[in-house]
Image 1 (cartoon, helix red, strand yellow):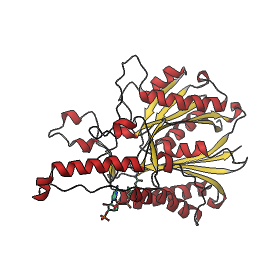
Image 2: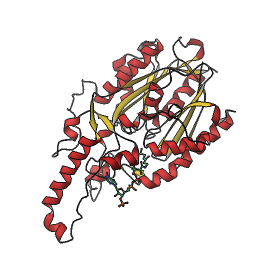
Image 3: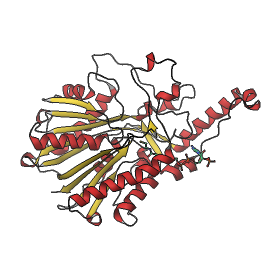
Image 4: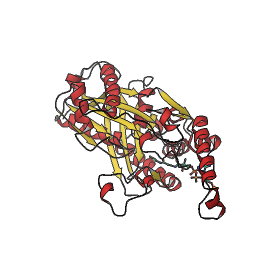
Length: 373
Ligand code: COA
């Protein structure tokens, strides 16, 4: 059995972004127009008036200040309110493929590897641009990797589940080097007209390279001490988009095939799920939570992350122990915990232990315990 090591990570950040101020200004214009157009029905009690959003609420409830998106103009266009994505021919790489490749190239560069060294590509994310051919096979092709590739979806926990699959393949020798890629275009499944969630998501792509210790390069390396995954069915975060939508009788409402959630319930139920998963996992590895130098947590809500870290550490975490990226990126689904890892790991010293923990719809949660070598 080989010892799996993370040897590189990469991040693609879309150049365009939207501040809470710009987002709320657009949403509130939409509300004003909607309420004006439906004034008579609202007056007659047949239609519910929409309430305005607020910058203060968004920051206080979530910790989000802005989000990167693939198309700012489309999202802020009152008549469109979603990203405009140019349709591409089948002979061109898809947008997800392009974003995933940018992150992958950076991960390979950091590991001192080339695409030819990779023989397993896993695309692990919440929303695939199409059912098939797999985005992972497309990335494998355009990057020039060998071996095999497949897509998998475990919602926001996808990257952790993907790392586990890559780690298992490297450990067993079924792959020499595994690239786990998480391209997320969350702006495409977000309901920008829903006040409860219009501020939640952003776009980004990440990649992580896993290799056996006996051939890992001399860059920043982390031995994978263990992985532990857990799922538990819940309808509190749901997206009903699928290939049967067109066949369903009656047809679903347009917003039922976009992201929707019961945010309060998610908060309450996922905090114990994620914290207990990490505590049990660390205990099984003989690692005390207090000795963990860093927690790279899924980035959905700042208050939730602070509570999870507090439950694991037994005290409030400081900013270096549980770094935050959602203020700039918002929730980038499966990419979030890897963005935190990518930006905040260089200062760890040999022997330092960290935990990457991702959680989300399903429910699903994954813990990956790593040690700097
Ligand atoms: N602007 C202003 N007020 C708003 C608002 C907005 N954009 N959205 C909601 N409100 C109001 C609500 O109407 C409610 O008003 P009321 O008290 O008069 O009824 C109040 O603010 C509180 O709303 P609530 O939805 O209960 O807020 P919250 O504190 O639970 O925060 C979330 C909402 C979504 C930020 C929070 O629940 C969350 O992040 N949960 C976890 C979600 C998660 O992790 N999901 C995983 C996705 S992968």
